[in-house]
Amino acid sequence: MARTRQQTPAPSPAGLAAAEPADIQRLVEDLDGMLNRLRLGAIREQLDGLLEEAARRQLNLREALAWLCAAEVASKEQRRLSMAMTIARFPFVRTLEGFEFEAQPSIDPGKIRDLATCRWVANGDNVVLLGPPGVGKTHLEVALGREAVARGYTVQFTTAMELLGSLVKGQQQGTLEARLSQYSKPKLLIIDELGYLPLEPQAGHLFFQLISRRYEQGSVLISSNRPVEEWDEVFGDQVVAAAILDRLMHHSHVVTIRGDSYRLREKRRAGLFRTPAGGSSSAGIGGLPPPTPAKEA
Ligand code: ADP
Ligand code: MG
Image 1 (cartoon, rainbow, N blue to C red):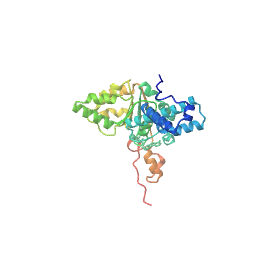
Image 2: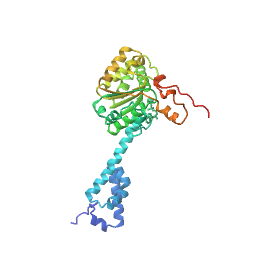
Image 3: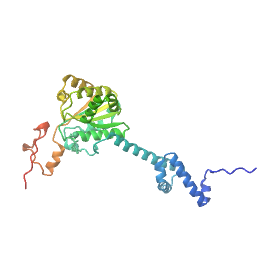
Image 4: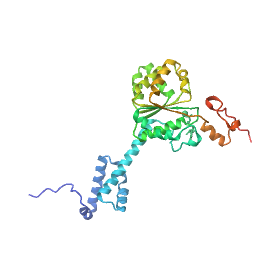
């Protein structure tokens, strides 16, 4: 009895060379289908270019396979990164490369570079950034947050107002537990701008509950324009503030930034504001001089 012909013979290079155009067309379609089924989207989309490049480089089969896989891995990593960045909800894109350390001499660049390794995130430690408005706290939070995302940690950025507003609402609507566990999930929670605006009376208690949950589990990166000695005023309760600081500061790195607002510095450079008399600019609210409009020319 005649043997049934194999439906899809494994193509050999010699077979391919002799194949009819119709066979090649079918092979291309089959391959496309298999790449789709295996979810190898990058290889599928760039197949012709990748194969041409592999041929140009005279790669052997093993090398060519590794080259194709590397393209797929790079594309999947890129997608993971951009999805994680979206989930983190950073307010803008800022990087450590874009941070001018010369403009803020009170910051030790070595300390920031050490923080950029994210060992503190791996250990569940906290970072507290203190300083007046405009000195780069949010910039550093975003830049360090992006480093953490790049290293595969889950990150969420929020402001103190948004976070505490959500917890207060949760308490009123009976959904506090869900909200606390939502904010406890990311390995790194970034809380921006504590102390800028007055908090609701119960906010301190709610914040304490969140910090207790995250204690030694996940990291908190928090920024404030108020020194920690004033946090009892921020939370309106000395006992609660002390309990929050006790947990937050236990395993923590504190970066205190002193100096001029970068925003006003840029404006001064552009001639919009006068340089403060005597060259010193440490007077005024939060170390910030009152801006003096430049005279009309
Ligand atoms: P803060 O959060 O302390 O109020 P920001 O981080 O929002 O200050 O900084 C205000 C603006 O100035 C941002 O656009 C930020 O990127 C920029 N900026 C601040 N400090 C620096 C710096 N040292 N180098 C580069 N840009 C800076
Ligand atoms: Mg800020």
